Image 1: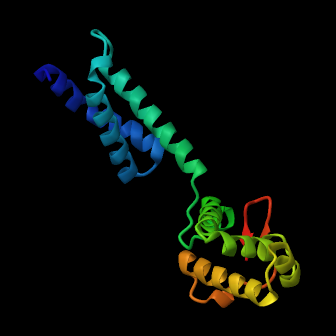
Image 2: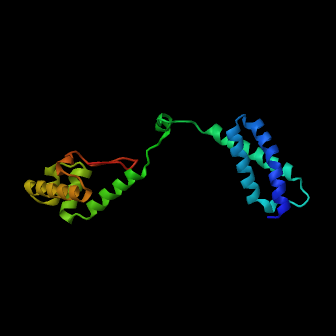
Image 3: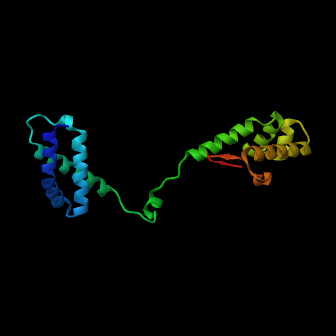
Length: 180
């Protein structure tokens, strides 16, 4: 940076401070604003055209910085306890979709007879007797297949007890929520 430009910047600081104090009504905020202005000016010195009034250019940067910060602060709200954020927070959907995908993958990995049994009982809502008739097997065999399928699914999905799977039908809603 040229020595004369550096001297001109230093001579501009008192006027910038006065302008910043008039905008912010706070000396500390004014000092921060002047520092931001000088940093921005130094960063964008290539945009300063020869013969331009340096003080006017710096004052324009300061004013723009002030109004940008003002608009940003106007949109922001203090929320030290997180009460406002809790009201506007939206639970992410990807967790439900990932859980749904995990269930589908686990069911796909079951042996074919266990998969058929769990889908007939869990997904289609058939009774054990109906499922046994469809699969041409005994009622006891059907109950055993469903029990083994539930145990494998619980293990694959990290569920501590296979009993956590209700005997109610598997319901898949339009939002891809899975209830077993």
